[in-house]
Image (tube, rainbow, N blue to C red; front, top):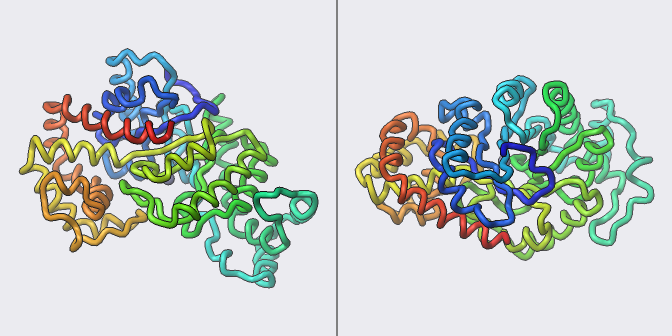
Length: 385
Ligand code: ZN
């Protein structure tokens, strides 16, 4: 049943080809996670040439064929403007992720108190000192000072207002939905104090959000494990978890959540069931793993195109792969850090050029594709349990 998932632990399976849901169902069955089988951003729709309706219909067909009768959700991911909303509402999506990243003022991190005061004045910012500078105490994260408060306000104030606007518009268009706020693609990490500020301001302004995706420290790159100091991340996650515990009204959401095997046990420990994980391109990589064995010629052409397109296609992603350091060819590429990132961000080019061949091959090899997906996601879900 396509429905809101609320605060249940949940797992998002983005599927850019529209063929992965049978594998996703096989993996998520009998786990504690409520699945989001349709999940696509406006950017992904543009690159894959699919509409919100097609994405949802493909997932629904597979759900019906498999006889999945438990709740599942459909996530309209990384919505940035008011104009992004209607097609997803019309198609029947249940989960709306608003990304106000364009309104985040990253430069606030480098401004001193005097400069922050000027910026707040220019923005005609509300005086929030009465709300945040008295009585807020927690043993886990430090208290606000005038400087950290103004920084949070300068950095996230406009993003919060944009989110409130998107939420109000959605409320006019639709009754009852899961609402996520994501600031995971900003330049700088979200401090626990800033996380508190965002959650508090949204709550104060009547936004009922079910999940929030901060930008954590270290690097959450696409299709590869966490890059950074795990002990530092663990300590930082503990502080973020203390913030979510202050509210108790929403889940934490891990974006670029695929393949972060070293992080899952930490996230499960800190948030228990109040957790949402988003994955997308990793299902495409499992499709390529299938092709690398069953259609090596096609896979070689996809890899060659990936190398050619990487410098351009990487522009809107956080990746650090170096083509010169990648494995040379064949199925080993799917276990190589550099190749995974290159293949991950060049999917739009590959689908544009070889889309029908890729689809035809995966339809023919549906069984190994499903098996690869099931194995890959079981590994994710077991570590999150
Ligand atoms: Zn994201």
